[in-house]
Figure 1 (cartoon, rainbow, N blue to C red):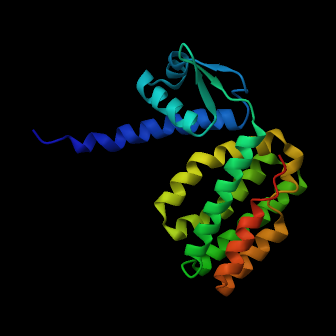
Figure 2 (figure 1 turned 90 degrees about the vertical axis):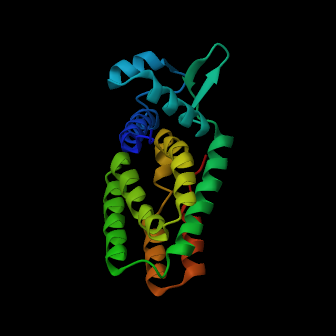
Length: 212
């Protein structure tokens, strides 16, 4: 009989939702480094079967946020500076590529939303609001990624950005040096001017200021 394709989107959404919820708990520190993760407990808490939880843990392991040890015990990884630097290099390169592909595709509304996000970012930095600062920073950089429409770039960023974001949260003071408001403004101005090389270079630079 025909494959019941209508059931696939719902399963995909459930799997992704479980991944996002567990990922965010690790990134914000609710699930602390070294904490053991039991798929049965997570499944009960989330109200799902163990299957999407196990799939989520495999994705989180690929991202470097959890590790499976002998005997199948799974733990939240500790923050490893070397792994964070590697993730930083990958994330910076992907954002540079996204900006290269997005310049010329960005609309006036896209640029307006980038400027609005940077104003939110600046306010959050002044108020030392790490949650809002990271949310605003993500919102700003997501716009050229979406404009570029490169699914491979988006997939790589989805995998490696959480590791970098966790390091930023645990090293809160470094947030003040990373993603400066001035660099964001320069990025937006260069995008508006159609300067592909200049905008790509500044995009890469904004992801190099996290000290780990």
